[in-house]
Image 1 (cartoon, rainbow, N blue to C red):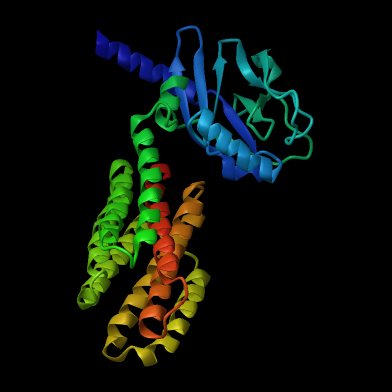
Image 2: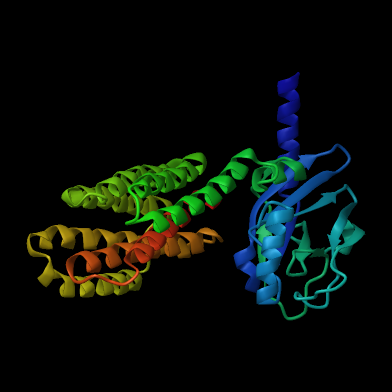
Length: 379
């Protein structure tokens, strides 16, 4: 009996999942739809739409607004809900018959509209996203090009299920990830302050990588586990590089980290554009030309390491081919910081002592690793 009810519910929800079309302005595609939750309440179907983000029209205000939303709602994602009845659609507080997408007043409104008040596409009612904070309407904005989202892939669940998945306030794993984030920042700062002052810094250096690695471990799925394993080798490299006699071993450990990241990025996102490879290989190998006269017996190992860095960094930009909002920033930025840290360390070790060596190397290294680990949360 229970199985029969589950089958009937699945069929019913599958029918409703094809029952409407969402349209989002093309210029706001980066804040597009990440997931749609659908739930049958008997007399109505609940649609909960998860958007990657919502951007306030004013840049500075948007930054403050994001921080406010992250604190209040526990997420950067925007979540909106409406209900479809047999003859109408009910918008509880997310309807706006706006004049412009960037309207700032009179945004949250309640409305119930009969289905015959909507446009139809392929026999499905069309719901328009009418404002920057993803209010809905039955009418398009004048002169705006839209992207069609035919709701053909849904998750069974309510608004509460969406909040439990995307809000750190209702998701213990995300809450722990947030605490690990702040703990890693504190440990990173302690490492930098204690460097060359106390051997205790070795403990905090390792602890920082462990905290970052735990973020990846908590959130990794599929090929993302390669990032976690890469962080284990980074931990080994952190320890080795604290002792001059183990520099080669440390270099080998980080070579393995770059290799694992390279494979992860390739499996997750594919290959970057050719010009990205050309640009990055050109910059990195140009640097090697100046380094090689100072390397002695380390010429070949450093060349191989340089090629590995260039490959990892180039493939990190492959995410730009995909509409994965936060990862588009986290992964290339993290990989760039990681590569910069290695370059700064190489110049300091083989060419001449550079100013602020500890701060420049450690801050960019840890921030880079942290951003890469955080990408496992959002992909």
